[in-house]
Image (cartoon, rainbow, N blue to C red; front, side, top):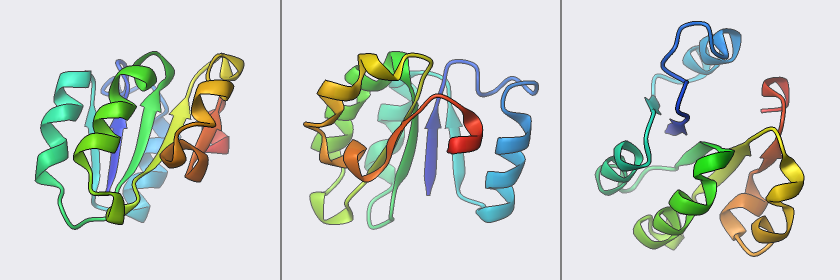
Length: 110
């Protein structure tokens, strides 16, 4: 399952091609536009492999919740999607779930 947290992801014009590509790959794409909405999803996705795409401005707020709520045996994978990758590099090196995913500044890299 992919959970995509981005303030603007619900807008049709944002990342249109990428959203279509993900929908072709999986029926399990959940798009949320707030940290609270993302938090509400976490307890309901037990026993599923989880991939997260997180807008950079939410990363430092939601990643600790992901690590705490999602079972370590499920090994969640987090991709940070942001404009300023350098802002996250040092912090991300301490987060195994981000090291499994990565930090990207262009949708084609996702």
